Length: 124
Image (cartoon, rainbow, N blue to C red):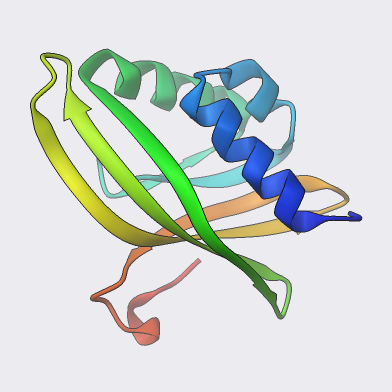
């Protein structure tokens, strides 16, 4: 992949625009994706699609990448995330770290780590 930063920024814009199909097209068929609502993972693009469809029925979130770093094959994205419920009440306004692993220009893993958790608490 020529420019990981541009790829990642585009993914977040697609997410904020709720263009699920365009994001899913960038996922490996065996993608492992963090399910922040349930605290586990979903596997495969169809499961991610279902997860987001369910998520967007109960919350509205906007996520803005602040910094993007690549180290040892992991893309770390420091993000500002604002989440509202369906009635517009603020649920969260926080900074978190998102992690991606890419292979052959496809997302193979995505994970989340809150900044308060040290690196030892993070696992893919």
